[in-house]
Image (cartoon, rainbow, N blue to C red; front, side, top):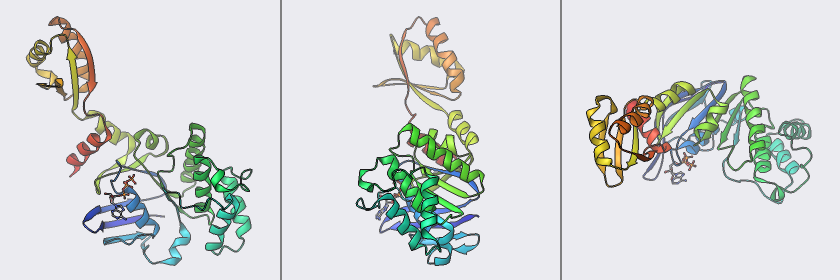
Length: 304
Ligand SMILES: Nc1ncnc2c1ncn2[C@@H]1O[C@H](COP(=O)(O)OP(=O)(O)OP(=O)(O)O)[C@@H](O)[C@H]1O
């Protein structure tokens, strides 16, 4: 199934959380990547029918999602926040989700969903006794109980230990291979890399990039990199680097020497050579713009 967003915006008072987004999410696993506050949760909630768009339309195979009860049978949402009563057992929680969907055989459906996330043995314990990873899995079971074609997951791997994470990643990948439409949000590039081939990038409510993971990763590494270098003689090193045309923009700041390298692979080879020739010792070299925010803002400036 295809989720389609056409010029979708959502604002909360004066805050524009999602700004004029047009995208299609089809079968397989798609990663929704963006820094905190980018609008990922807002977007997922609109896709799940929990939130009305302020502008534009969100449809599933051509049918409007907002206020369309029939369509909720096809969608499952795993929310980021704990919206689970701790006094319920895992079994009671998943069963109540099955009943809410008015499934003909709720017991059977709940059993299947709990088995899928390997939670059968802990199903009779109260949720408040669960680890973060177990809570996450029980939420996935509740979202899957009606076997939806579309599964939306908001930061599903947060707080999980590596084994739990691996298990959920395998589950998500398998469902994607089986043809379900899966969209999960994350602010961690490596996490998205392991599960999704296709990614959509959001920055400050805007759609910054879309496409194959490797292609976007390449655009991220090929962008100009800013390095901070400290050495035995920054001034001299700066002069030597400026003399070499291919090293990029060089500036001396209070924090030390900063170099904007257009081709960073080349620069990392060039720097030791230039330093040696100038008889300067390098103490430290660190990327000055490696945080996700700057990578994302680079992407959005290119695409916008
Ligand atoms: N109910 C609300 N009322 C007012 N502002 C909101 C509300 N929900 C979200 N926002 C604001 O909308 C913007 C987008 O928030 P959203 O939670 O969708 O982002 P996100 O990418 O999911 O971030 P995070 O990973 O931190 O949850 C933020 O500036 C947030 O403060």
